[in-house]
Length: 128
Image (cartoon, rainbow, N blue to C red; front, side, top):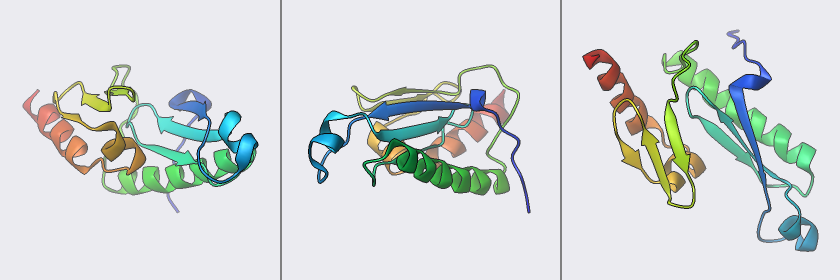
């Protein structure tokens, strides 16, 4: 079994209020969780429960499987202090600094479609 050795500093944790079923507790409390692995830009969200703890566990579970898949493909780098990507939700934009590629926030973060971003980064790193 492969393992990733990560610390709390490797992640950015964001809380936001959800929408849909759940009434006031879900709509007025920040109990939905988005967790982002800072270096790779891979993220996951947990919104299914009213509980912060449950949503955080769900997001970490999804993120762990995405990170393991990315590691198997060789896409998780460690030890870089440079900012990899800039995420700007209000403008619906994600910018990869090395390649200059811009994609929609919804496509990259919500749907987890990082394939094109990863390929563009690989090409930019090869050219450097």
